[in-house]
Amino acid sequence: MAASREQTITQTIRNYGDRLFRFIRGRVNSDADAEDVLQDVWFQLSRIVDLSTVENLNAWLHRVARNRLTDRYRKKQPEALEDLRFGDEDGEGAFIDDFLPSSDDTPEEAYFRQIVWETLYEALDELPEAQRDVFVWNELEDETFQSISDRTGVNIKTLISRKRYAVQHLRERLADLHEELLNF
Image 1: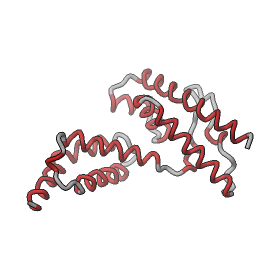
Image 2 (image 1 turned 120 degrees about the vertical axis):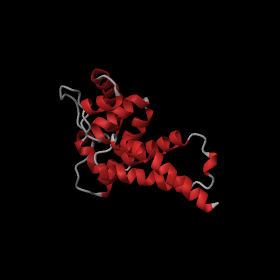
Image 3 (image 1 turned 90 degrees about the vertical axis):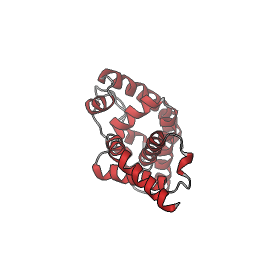
Image 4 (image 1 turned 135 degrees about the vertical axis):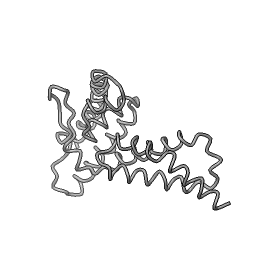
């Protein structure tokens, strides 16, 4: 029974490994990051007691990979928010560090940074998947619209439009928080 299970896992890795790596690699900045996420997927697969309970293995693997990628972008350090630009394509708009207190690392400022970070992720979760993905890929993962378009097959103008709607939503959500922090 155990030998059959190991054989099934080995065959699954052979069958889906390259395709899954390419899927993940298109959503992270380096091969090393893609390998880390892929390793997490294989670990999750190895934890399943009865592999026959998974109806569509390909879909399951991709869903786990997407979940790991989402977890990965949520775990980014708050300091990375300072580089997050909420401007439009013309470069106009607020910067995330306008919302954050100075980085003197006092407990209060660390707390405020954490609140901003959590609010940003809550706001991202409220977005439709297409808008959220474009925003995350372009802003958090520094992927160009051209590379996103090449990978997804979606027109660049459509991607820019989706990002614009995402930025509008995020600005609204963070504006309320900004006012609260100013009045604190």
